[in-house]
Image (tube, rainbow, N blue to C red):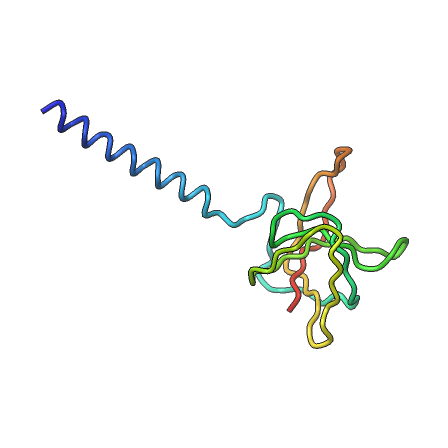
Length: 120
């Protein structure tokens, strides 16, 4: 009888652990990312340079050159992986549309908030 209760308890604990572990890993949210309910305006600039990848499908990128540069979080949901120093040109029939904001801390501890965009 003790074996049966131990066996059932082991199964229940395993199921709870797997549920919590799967739930944690399935979260595709990026900490600091706030998405809008509706998409925002297009950014008119066409050339981006990846500054730093945050995830395979999300990277901090710069539009333009200093002093007119604009930092954004570039996100894609189509399985395209970004890499550091990658140059991207937005196609003429698409634009970098604002979908939210991204807040992060710099290496020296400053908190920055930039637009989150998706090329559509």
